[in-house]
Image (cartoon, rainbow, N blue to C red; front, top):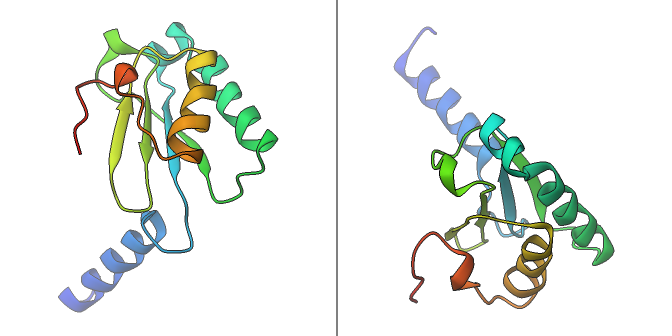
Length: 122
């Protein structure tokens, strides 16, 4: 790096690459796939999310994975980021619950509060 301005440009470029809150993007679902998540069943949860997303042809929904989310005893964990920038964390997920998150939260816009880490209030 040669200047503070170059550092700012690098920062802007990096933020643009990870920014999920643009108008063209829909929701993003992140699945915790560290050892703790995998041992708790994150792989079948991830597969259920991908299958349901494909079945419904939700092209604007991105499903990705990450490492440890930090609450190992609550795994498998998924985080849903919506276009408006809100994040909802779902815990103790199963394949059935994952499909319901796609159907209720992503498609219908209704957070399933009984699956979340805390009570959701709007």
